[in-house]
Image 1: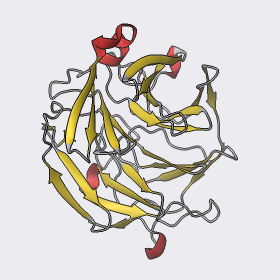
Image 2: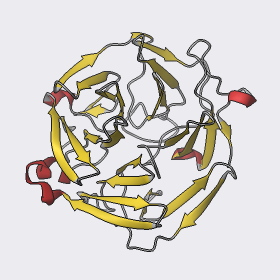
Image 3: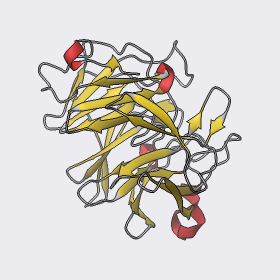
Image 4: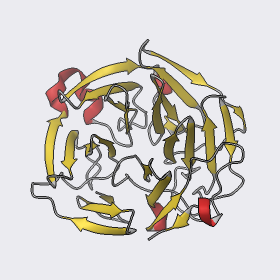
Length: 306
């Protein structure tokens, strides 16, 4: 699923890390309509896909789940199934979905409302009951889209992205228990403003890779920088090495938002795919903050695997 230069797709692909191979998958049930700018997240061995827009930029407003064990898609809901959330959810694109592994809740944050403003609220999806409900409403100026998000210790964090006509480099902390929102200012380096950066949480470190520093895509504005936010100390680092490619792309195929990462926790390898690279890359992010994990050393590298 996602887009090429001019087309929008509904295809499905499977990556096997042990063999470093991709293969096209043909599900046994009808697939979601072609779309782009959707968001996807993995939970209990299944992939959940929310929203997006079609080739004419009409919002889809639906949600689907793919079960690899059955090789089948199932439609979960249409936005109008949930009255109070219809207005926001139905009009969203560039939102992010993030799994809270402790509660099993999937939080859908932000999204372009179609008028250049980011949605300021957070929705909670319960996979067990297939219900979508409002979770937290932040001030309008905290609305985001094209951002990254992650959950840590009962809090949802929204990083970078666009708010109105402005690209951001801040982090918003959403307390899911107390339903409060605040902007936090990490110590250390001040990162560039970004949207579409890949976000990966590993223990208490968050990697922000690539993205674009302008509203236009392409090599001129694409970023090769890697930032690491250390949650425990509240510090932001810029990696001394840069990515070997421009990291700007569309929605992720599986597990996380644009471009895409999935983490093999057992072996400590993160896989980066899609974007401008048209390839799959891997690196080991579990090294301590000091020294930072290397992006070029063969044993701890961001290396091309397919």
